[in-house]
Length: 97
Length: 194
Image 1 (cartoon, each protein chain N blue to C red):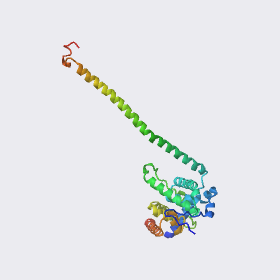
Image 2: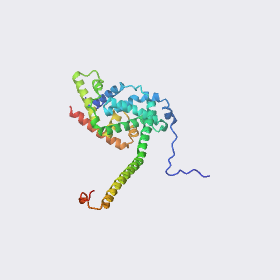
Image 3: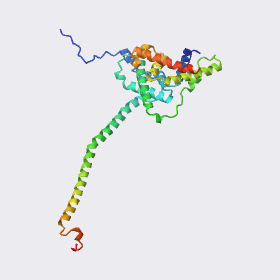
């Protein structure tokens, strides 16, 4: 068979195969309505997530500042304790501490 | 008396072609009339019934959503085929990047391979034709995207050159070049099996 003949057979075969398909019983009108709703929902969730980032960062910064303040206070207490000692730490047992 | 000068950068919208636009008023009728052709193009391109069904469905959903913007510059068939060509192209590209998701390919041409138009040919010849049809389909699906599109629009959808230009947005020269290259590749592949 010539190439043109095979080409014709190919076309007829594809046509025959496709003719077996009928439009699905499918509410494409509803589909076209629900998709934008879904898209809006996804966009809203994303916007909320992005909008929440500054608040989250702010809260983390405040927490870090609070932890730092506690650590500083402890350090200052330790320093003050060291300064107020009348005898060196090594001799504290002899001095009755 | 002054006449309104055209303002640069502002395109004057052409009047919609009412006759063609009116043709999509009954969208159910549009689906019934064009389903097979859209599905057939997707099936020929992808060789996968499920994917072709999804593409055809998406094509009509997209067209339905865009029906208010359809101004009848082209026929309804050309408009739908433009959408289908774009969807098939996007599908092929996304599939290329999702190769790990793909199940082993099951050729969709089972029935097509068994369907041979001329019943008079002898069984031996029939087997050969079946193989050649299958080989042609394989060769077609392996063509580069533009060549495959142009080839299928010409030889499966039987569109003329200007229709292919309208559907693909390619120039006439480009369509001819893609068609020539596609034909050469497919012929070479099919003849190598003889």
